[in-house]
Image (cartoon, rainbow, N blue to C red; front, side, top):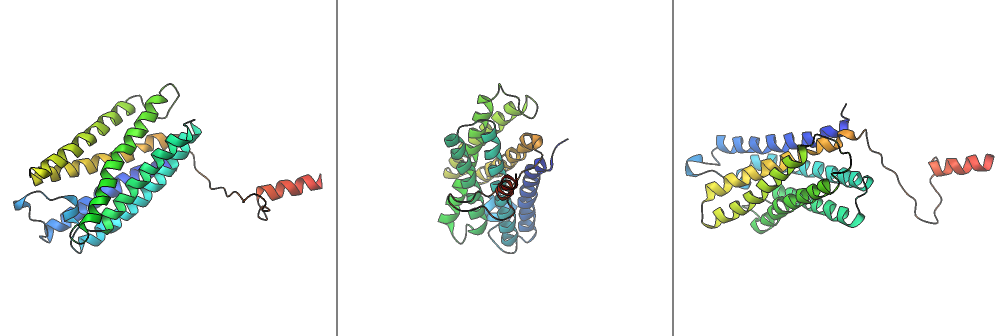
Length: 238
């Protein structure tokens, strides 16, 4: 039986995929996007109101969910024995991907193009790097029991490879310029990254829940009602 945490990556994937296609549909309906002139980039679809507001909201919520997933994955890898510095490196890579996603949503291309491009770099490049690092950890721990079927790792390898190929193709086609083909690569890349996030549901299927614990600074007495206070009271009584 999968725990409720395994639903979080699935929800993120569905939220993001449905959200950007809704933005695309609105842009086509209100003729902000003219498909007779070529297939648009994701960012162009979300550059004009009213869909720009929806675009920002979907990406901001998606970025927040991605941050939560990256933190959960960090703690899971730590419990599996992954060393601190590579685990933290992977965590920060994922957090930068989430930050880039939020920047893309909040700084539209037509208003703040340089900032928007920085966000796109973080979202796509750092996002792809994040999943390559996750795949590396998964292969290095292949001797240990892990959730999911054996085909999960080859699937992730295929998706990460496709993401890397699409990034290169997107850049090359944009410079030629074959903008419609480049935009199609961007859409495919975004879909694959969302799917890779969704696959974390397999890893989280072994988790029953999570908890937050506060640690007081050295020299400070623990808060009333905390476990440390209760243990001290019990020791004093005995």
